[in-house]
Image 1 (spheres, rainbow, N blue to C red):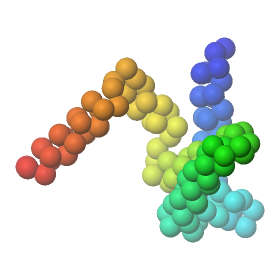
Image 2 (cartoon, one colour):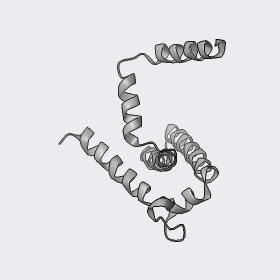
Image 3 (cartoon, rainbow, N blue to C red):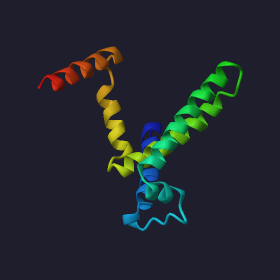
Image 4 (cartoon, rainbow, N blue to C red):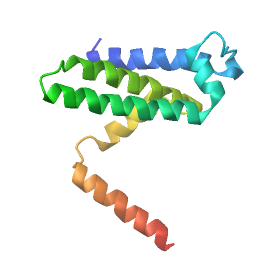
Length: 126
């Protein structure tokens, strides 16, 4: 089994746990952090995503100044986790994100951004 498959499996397992914490699946906000965030709604988990993104930036800045670079991994894990809660809330999965990354594979970031801007302008014109 490749590391890529193992990573996708780990994300799928975590996504299944998050899915099981939804109220519709019996998630109990009194017993589960994920269920509590989902129960509170988007403002709660989106706030956590913002906090975690800031912590990633702070960990990277610390690493630039002699801090422990492995703290970036810890903070990115928190960011991914909370982002996965958002994905679940909106009926999406890590597989959807992986598919999008695969779609972009081999495409220049500069070209991809230019294409998105052109499509947005076309959408505004219609």
